[in-house]
Length: 140
Image 1 (cartoon, helix red, strand yellow):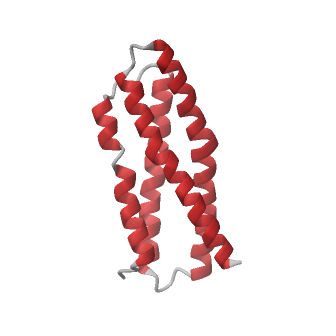
Image 2: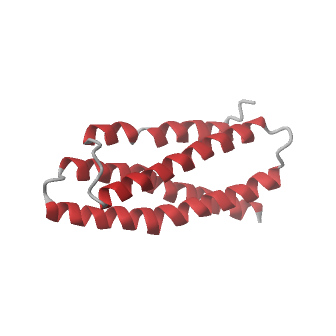
């Protein structure tokens, strides 16, 4: 059973990251084409569907399967697991912030630039590097 949950966790993680990587990219397009109302209306639909239908279910699948795996491993003596969980918490906070930006765009009140979202889009990459290092290398 454990190996199947690992398999599911990895697939969920990949799916979640597809939303974490692509949603800020949609925000770049949205911010840089704000005057093109037809384009903006299409992007709003894409942002909504990506967040609600891919991002949210994938996040929950990742967190629930990861919780099972963490419980199975045990928390005692696994400092790398504590570090991983901490960085996953940062990732969840980042994901929630994407929903805030999405709602701001939906209401036509987001004033952030495309450049801001290009930089903001780097955060999940940095978190992913640390999270995967904790699992593969287990530095402590």
